Image (cartoon, rainbow, N blue to C red; front, side):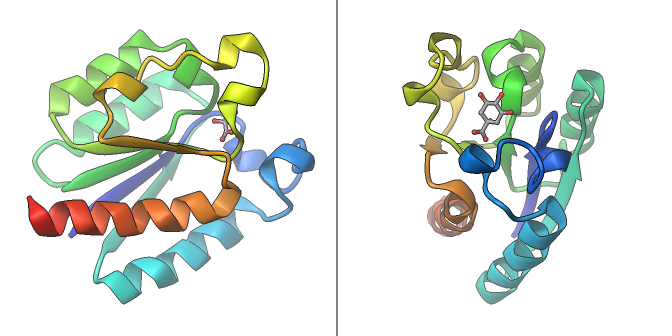
Length: 145
Ligand code: DQA
């Protein structure tokens, strides 16, 4: 299976930004660990991180017809971006929404997501572990569908 992992704005600063919420590991470390999990599941994992909304949208468009599944942490765009929602609807690729922190126990404005109701599922509050679990979920979903 071919999977695309997308990380949104400020996630390039993992390990530096608010480590109480987002942990101490750098994004590069997390990605290399995830590649190990992906390998063990026979998944080809592509990763894309950007701070720019249009670049995230363009990457989603590029995945049309060549990607089986998307795992996306839209970061702050979760709470603002109708455009990201429309991009995911346009390419019709099943996806999981993921967050490091529990967005429901933070500021009120983080409790709304423009993506959750069109996602296969949502994982939040489990930090990096959630990413590994999302790979397993995606694998199970694709094996059944
Ligand atoms: C986040 C939660 C968002 O509310 C926030 O804007 C982020 C990261 C998370 O992974 O917990 O940048 O998506």
